Every structure is written in C-alpha cells, then in structure tokens.
Image (cartoon, rainbow over all chains, first blue to last red; front, top):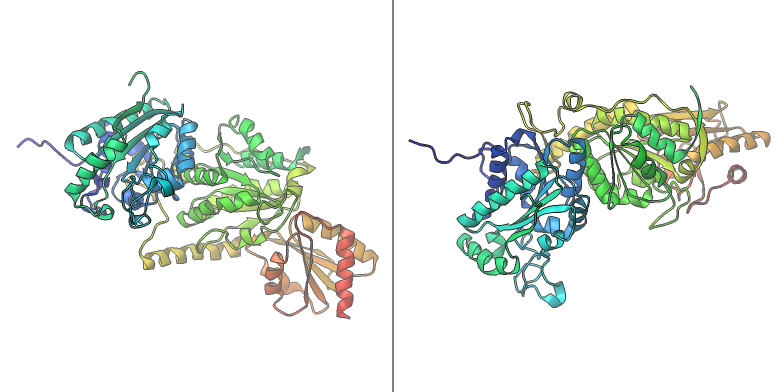
Length: 247
Length: 358
C-alpha cells in the first residue's frame, strides 16, 4: 500500500499536554514539517515562551530553551548572534507576546533580527485559566472580564500584525488561521515563506496563527473553530501584511 | 608588563574582551556608560557581537540566549539596572547558564543618585531574584583587580555553569589608574563550543540527543531534587571560590571589615590610627558571596572592636555580625546615598567607638 502521510520526525512520538481542540498541536506540526522539508531540523534552535506552550520543547524534536515571560525575542536575538548560520525561531502566545513581551517583540523586529516568530493568538490567557489578553475580543468573556471585554475599560484588542508591519525590520508579516483544512494549508505556506526569508538573511519574519482555546472559551472544539471563523477573522483579517519583493 | 593609564569602565570592557567575551548586551545607565560605548566599537573588531538592548530586561535575556547557545557573554549595568536583570539572573542560575556580569553600583533606593554606593550588597549576595540560588560576587578594590577578576570570571562561570557577578562601584568606573592588561584570549569557534559546552543549544547536528535548556519543573519532588543538586554546586563554590585579604599587625585592638574602594580608604585610616597610637587591622572580603567567615577565626582576644565600614546602612554589617558571632562588640561606620567618608572621618568615628567601650 502506498503511504500518503507520515508524522514528521520533527515531532517526538509522545502525547501532548494540550487540551482537546487546541490548535497548538497543529501549529507545532506545521513548523516542524517545514523545517524537515527544508532539511533544517538539526540546524535549528528555538525558544519556547511562558504559557501552555512552554512545554513545546517536549514535543519539538530540536535544540530548544525556555524563556522568561515575553522575553523570547530577546533570547532568540542572543542565540542568533552566536549562531548566524542556524535557523532560530520563537513560539509565543498572545499574553506572552502582545502583553508582557510587547517591548521585546517590537525591538527584535526593529533591529531586523534574522529570526522568525510564530505568534499563537487565541484571544485569551490559557495556562493561567482564561484571563483577558490584549487580543481578547470586545464582548468576549474572560475571568478578569466576566461580563465581557469593554472598550471603555480595556481598550480595543491589539492587532500585532498590523502594528509590526509598520516596522521596517519586520520584512515578512502574515496572519493565518488554523480553523479549517484550507486555512491550515495556507498557514503552512506562510511558515515556509517565513523560514525562507530568514534563511536568505532578509530580516525579521512573523506569522500569526488565529488559534483556539476551547477550554477557556467554554466551547466545544467544533464551536471553537466556528468562533475563529465568525468572531476572530472579521476583527483579525487574514493575509500578508508585508513581504520582500521576491516573495 | 607595560602599564597603560585607563579609565575604569573602559578597562573593564577591555578585560572582558581579552577574557574571551564574544557577546555583550547593554543599555545606557550612569555610571557605566563607557562600557557599552567601548563595546560598540571594540567588540566587533575582536570578532564578537554587540547589541544595544531596549532595556536591561532585554539585555539580560539576550545574555541568557547567547550563553545558552554556548557564547561567552559579558553584561554590565548599574544598580537599578541590576534590579531589572534579576529575572534573568534567577533563570540563568536555575538553567545553569554561565554569564559574567558587572555592576558599577551607585546610590539607591529607587532611581537614587549616580555617585558610588555599596547598597547593592544585599541585592548581590542574597539573590534579588526569585527562588533558591547563589551567584558568586567578587568585589574589586582597584581597576587592576577588577581587570583580573573580569578576565578570570569567564572560566569560573563556565566551570560551575553559573552566572558570576563583579560588584564594582561608580568610583572605580569613573577614575583612572595605571594598569597592565592580560593577554587576549581568542573567541571560541563553533566546533570548540560544541566540544567544550556539550550542553549548549547549538543545533542538534550529529549529536545523538537534542539539547533542552529549561528551568520549569512542575513536579515538586523533581524541582526539589534539582535545587539540591544546585546547592551541592554552591557548596563547592563556597569552598573553592572564597577569597579575602587581611592587613595590619597581629593582635589589633580594632579590626575593620571593608570591601571594594572603601577598603582603600580604610588602609589610609589604619595609618592615621597608627599615628594616633591605635593598633588596627582589616579584613577585606574579596568575595562577598561566598563570604569569608573563616577570616574572622583569626580575631584574637586582644581585639576589642570589629567595625563594618560601608557605603550602605548596615548591609555588610549583617555578615560581619554573623561571622563575629558575639565574641567581640561589632560597630558600624558608614555613609550612604553616594557620600564617601574621608579616612580621617573613619578614624575619628572609630576612636569614638573604641572610647565608648572603656
């Protein structure tokens, strides 16, 4: 029989600690598949954040380190300076990147660090139990906004792709979603391009994944996919915000 | 060896480069600004890399990343900057990542002032960050001694896989002294990093196992075992790193304890006291952690008073009291906020404290 699918050797053959319906596993696999296809798995160093995906290093079969909350882009900048020939990426959630680490991500982009950041935007704090993130939608409930986020008290959700696209050093900025097979395929293409931008030394590359958190959203996995489509994509439009001419 | 006249901060930076530092991450803060300035033009000449970080918080995390990747890393800042760096110091201790860091300290608390201070003694020796850990702290009393400490600190950091701190002060950073510079070491190549730091994240390559550098341990028994292993290392450091110097004749009636630039003032004070007929001695802790408790065993029954002389409100005093352990009265002679006492002021206050015992 012809084999049509195999799990990338970039993923270790272990069960993850992620909840049913969480898209971390999909994002992990896309990134690892791209690295394997690029022949870079053994040439890559990655940084995991604080949040559910701090344990990404238990699943991604590459050299990795943890980072303090929000500091992954600074850590990756240090790694990159020591190993200019390696592929370096950070993997960060929205509390980590868009809240406590907003300074580090902006300045890594500002310096044009030749690293890639994968940004998991699920509009909530996952690991700590459903608190409001800078990306939580207006009206969306969180344990620190039990009647839903209001613009008056909390401001409007932060759009990181749009913000980073104003920075010259961020040469590749794209938002994708992990809610449907078609969008997952598009996401993989964006991951591949982001790595190619880095390998060509063009500057900082950034892919935002609109992701699910069924547990803290209080939704079944299929409802979570609907939430991404109906609520998140209208506020966080998909597509490319910045790319080098040759891409 | 030929001596050159150098400003403290520039000499510290040059010592780090010669000690093999390939990577420096810093943020402007007085009184150490000459260090990032010097590094910005000299480090790349030596084949290294410099980043002016967006904050001390970013700088220490860049240092963590670069050192985790096997680079030889130097960072510097001044007191409030060290406060911001505590996050990274705690992480580096837990994940056993070696970095050499320098605090050119100033007066606090808060933004404080920019004149020399020693009020970071607790911050340095007690661990300003979260959790159980230790950082060896070396306190230079001259620019030459600082050069030698910084130069040698890279080997110590690598040997124990732990951050090492040099606690200087704004006086040492800003003054000039004739110094001799040690021979420059070459930066490690990629192959040397992989051979000498097999734990580093360098990309898996042909290694049979991938490397992971982490501090998360959610199971309490696993975390406890990890901390006990760290403390076996700290026990070794206490035995192997502790350093101090003693000055003066045997059986002094007053023993001063002072570190860094204050020890130089006290050396002059001792001459003044000798002229006035008092027999004085001094213990100068060269390492603040590990603290040289053994040095105090030599205090004889002729000694009437031990005095902590410091630019802080009795921080060094706590270790001096613990070391003296009630055998002799312990006094404090101090200024703070960036005020530095004269040797005469120290002598006058010492005599007053001695007379109070009569």
